[in-house]
Image (spheres, rainbow over the protein chains, first blue to last red):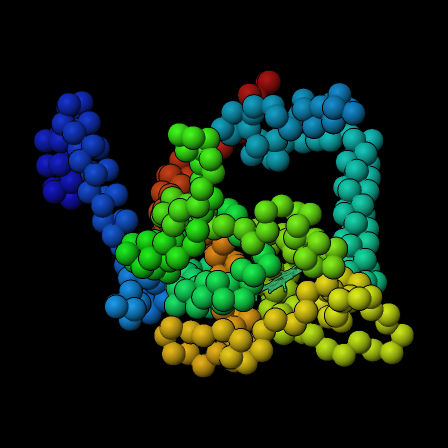
Amino acid sequence: MSMWATLNRNVFKRTSTFALAIASGTFFFERTFDLVSNTLFERINKGKLWNDIKDKYE
Amino acid sequence: MAAAVGRICGARLLKNYGIVGPQVCQLSTSTQGWTRNRKLLLSTLGVVGGGVGALLFALEQSVQASGSEAHPPHQPWSHDGWFKSFDHASVRRGYEVYKQVCKACHSLQYIAFRNLVNVTHSEEQAKAEAAEVMIKDGPDEEGNYFERPGKLSDYFPSPYPNENAARAANNGAYPPDLSLICSGRKGGEDYIFALLTGYMEAPAGIVLREGQNYNPYFPGGAISMAQVLFDEAAEYSDGTPATASQLAKDVATFLRWCSEPELDDRRLMTIKAIGMFSMLAAVTYYFKRHKWASIKSRKLAYKPVSKK
């Protein structure tokens, strides 16, 4: 709980830091989210995608 | 019509009761619900709407059963399913089948060689594929048209200069462009596969004209395209045995890719949308509980003022 309170006090209270938190949070969230989805997609379709088979046709 | 619907639903359904409104409305006997007439009208509307829907559905089903053509059986495509991408090795083999067999008669005018890059071919391989065909270009400085080897940006050349030439070469039947055929025919790749492998002797009583063949999957049965896929009808560069059904399966997958090149992206988008919306759903659920907590745990005490 105290971590939450610290966060609240130091980041969310001031508009400037709050906005900064939103911007950087968006950035990192999107990067990880895309990474996770792509990995999942490539894992499900392993062996079928062009990246998996391109070395077969040298 | 719109006025009637507005009168029925508008006033009361859209009325803003405030946050405790719905509960008060249910608990109290003094607020009026819908009148009898309104209930009657709404339920009639519901029954009629449902009935018309059911009728349309039944009609559609009976039309499906009344045709003379066979319905293509469903095949286990590897791109069937919410998250399943194309089998790119199969798309590549399908391209080889198109190039060696179908290209003689069918155009594929909405696909360019650049579309193959990183789908079925590397950039160098796609360039080499393009360089194999001659593209009509021009006019040059003297106003003449000339032929040159293809480039990545060129679209696939058509086998005939125009539709009349195509008809003249095929007993009056026009071999349709295959770019969008998978989306344009009922059954999609199942239909293509069934059509290509479904040729048979015409049953007694079916009259075929000159150049026609019998195929139970083709509407009407008499198709002007002869059977083109036999074992070893094309050659695969990756060594897969080229049986007739393998050729048909690969070319059907390739044609699905031609019709829907964005399929892989859509599958990826499905994963992303499910992830995103489940997070949003969790937030929404939490927020709803948060807002309703005070309302649901509230106790109303009614204390009549004593008249005495």
